[in-house]
Structure formats: structure tokens, C-alpha cells
Image (cartoon, rainbow, N blue to C red):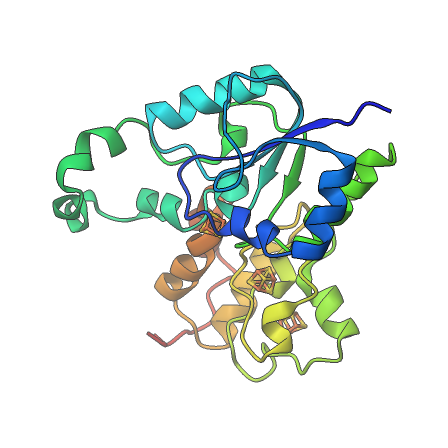
Length: 263
Ligand code: SF4
Ligand code: SF4
Ligand code: SF4
């Protein structure tokens, strides 16, 4: 059997998604026996001009170079997988959309012109993406089972339930009930509720579920005493670009419980 040609690439990001895969040492060796790993930053030569069966791409588009690389990879692979929150939602770097440029432009120094090239955007804003593996960083087990499914000719499962489903299954105390601003009800699970298991609220790094009830989430947070600014900042940290209706919903009538600022 011909081994599928697989490439891992990164555009603007922190390399954390790629490293999360490397650190899974035992299983990565199993996988490399089954695939032809043609590109992996830090390990193998990375050449976007090669042809691939599957490309995993970390990072978001934030420069013309990113966009060129993305388009080249899309043209050179049969399957393109958006790897991690930056690629899937824009993540923290895309928060720039919601801040005043004057607050940060003095920090950009000589990179200013380059960074100004393209508004920070997830990769599906530019090209067709076949699969999404969200998270900051993604769950390494999910990456491996994704690859195994493809090798077995199965369609990889895309998780659709919210974090709350796994959180309940793990018998956690609900953090919303004790007044913490947990975004689990509107966030895609698949991380085994790793944050809430440890008592930390979910910040939404895996992006919103398709059928989320944003209106209800905002209402609950307001009832818990969080104000509009806090809610917007929290929801925009990882997935602001995937919540274009946030401003409208937050200002809607019926969502106006009396908040106090918890900043
Ligand atoms: S999703 Fe998180 S870990 Fe991955 S590149 Fe972006 S910031 Fe880094
Ligand atoms: S702690 Fe968060 S994720 Fe867990 S059940 Fe409560 S709201 Fe859902
Ligand atoms: S619990 Fe929320 S913030 Fe934590 S990894 Fe899962 S989706 Fe991301």
C-alpha cells in the first residue's frame, strides 16, 4: 500500500500546535511508520511546493506571505486540515480586530508594514478547509485518532457537543453555579473538559458550537454579575471572529439583567 504523503506546516502562530504533536513520542513513531511524513518544521524539510495527500496547517493568516503559503498548500494537497485555534478561529492574534490600533502600533517596530498586510483571519476565510482540529493547543489524542481514521478510510469524527457534556461526564462541580464565567455551554468539546476538570473556567479555545445559544449564555453571565465589556472581552479572546453577532446579541432587549463590573 502506498503511504499517504503528509505535511505539517505553520504560518503565523506560536508553534504550540506543532509541538503538541511532537511531544507524543511513542505514537508519533507509530504514525510515521504508516505515513510518508514529508514536511514537519523542526524535524524535516518544509517545502510548500511538494504535493501532499494531507496537510495540517497551524496558524492564522496575518501577512501576504501567510496567504501565499496557504494558497500554495491548498493547491498542492488533497486534504487540508486546520490545526489549532489560530487556524480555526483566529484565536488571540485576531483579537487585534477588537482593539484600538493606537494601543499597540508603537509595539510593532520594523514589522509594522508587514503585519499591516492582511487583517488577521482564520484560514477558512481564504480557502476551503476539509477538516478542523480546534484548540489552543489541540488535543494530541485527537490529532492521532484523526490520522488513524483517515488511514483506515473512515471519515474523521468532528466533535459537535459542547464542553459541558464532557464536564458533566467527568462529574465536575459546575463553575457557572459558583459564579465563574465558564463558556463551556457554547464551546465545542473534544478536550475532555481539561480546564474545568482542574477548576478553571472554559475560555472557549475550541470555538463556538454550531447550535450554541449565545443569547442564553450572555443572559446567564449577566445574571451572574458580569458586565457587557467583560463578556465581550472573554468571548472574543479565542473566537471573536466566529461570533459576528456578539455585539448585537449583547445589546438585545431581554439580555439586560443588572450587571456589575467584575474586572
Ligand atoms: S492555537 Fe494556540 S498553541 Fe496553536 S499556534 Fe495558536 S496560540 Fe499557539
Ligand atoms: S463548569 Fe462549565 S463546562 Fe462544566 S458544566 Fe459548568 S458551564 Fe459547563
Ligand atoms: S475547556 Fe475550554 S478553554 Fe479549556 S481546552 Fe477545553 S475548550 Fe479550551
